[in-house]
Image (cartoon, rainbow, N blue to C red):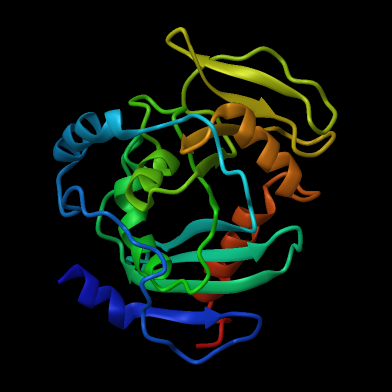
Length: 254
């Protein structure tokens, strides 16, 4: 039933231009490993069960398309807008955009962001016609209390490399990071390096980068610096943020 629900709410399609609504394709296949209509206690049990599926080694060899995902909320109406933007590297311009509006179905609970946002992202991801090689997420990868942040959880489900690009630290400690773009400092948690503090723009606050799935930390940092653009927030997630906020304000074409 959840797939039929998303079939009706997905909208806001763009591929080089604003297109009319299209039927959902099968470009992005998303695994069904567990239910989403669960309590926070059940969600933590699911995290413990699927965490061994996380793989953070190697990385994509041929990157042609990258994507960013994000979610915007309206707590007054109880709705959320989830979106994905695909870019053909090295161009910073989107070649496809998808978004969907759905009711907020899971409460805000620290450490359980993936159970709040991934169900909303399923529709836009399944509607993609262009399959991304790497997905940038506005959230944590393995730099998470259970090693299963939004990017790690999503990567397991789509079986694609994902990168956690967080604006703030959730766990871990680190040494000071240099002030110039490209400076990094390892982020360590419980005796393990789980990410890095990365200066993505000279003179501004750093980002907290962690591998989500399907790549190692060095590759995650390289891709962020190579394709992240000139701003603090990497271009894929910055554009996804702009998309969902435009959709929330009713400024997108359907």
